[in-house]
Length: 280
Image 1 (cartoon, helix red, strand yellow):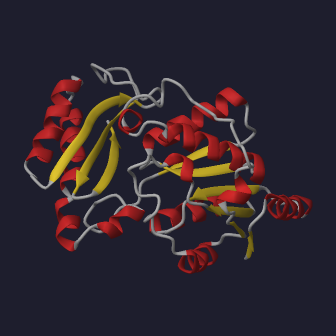
Image 2 (cartoon, one colour):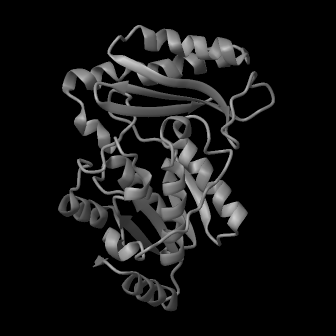
């Protein structure tokens, strides 16, 4: 497995892979890889002959009071994990090299990025869309794999790819969970053992809404109430939102009837913000 740090090195490696007749898969990450990330790499390996993994803690998607400075950076462990999972190359640029001096161009996917996390993290999805567009341009992959835990991010990327005609196929890979059901996240390492147990109320809340939906209930208020009742029973959790949304637009719905919908939740647990979702 190769490790490169510049776009010319990345493009040269991708060109060699294409000359060898291989299709190119891509998994963008911010590092601090866990089993969820590794499952994305394995999925990309199934879909392509040459897998590029980017490891880049992107400064433009963090707000001024968020955890950019303390975001865990574990490159050596990440390198080993990528190799075992089947990655062909790691692209690990520095921010100074990746963002041109004086850069002033942004990709802003309007509407779909406004609610949910977008409401509470102004500028976050502009930073995400911009860096992913840059990475797509640099890697020139055929297929890219994203985790469905970040449901709104996946919807934003799909819309950007459609609107800007990026020649890359987007795959949303199912959320990988801890043994107790909590969605895997690099930020889970901030949680104590007690907090990790308390966090199980989040998947339990999603399950409560799903169970009610399976009985034929389509009213979003009733579905949200079922989830919120579970969240309220765990006082350590401070819910930020609990919404029933259309899977394509991320817009809240009054009813799930005839639509592809999901329940999406964000909560603070101590200083850590956790998100999760489930189809309905």
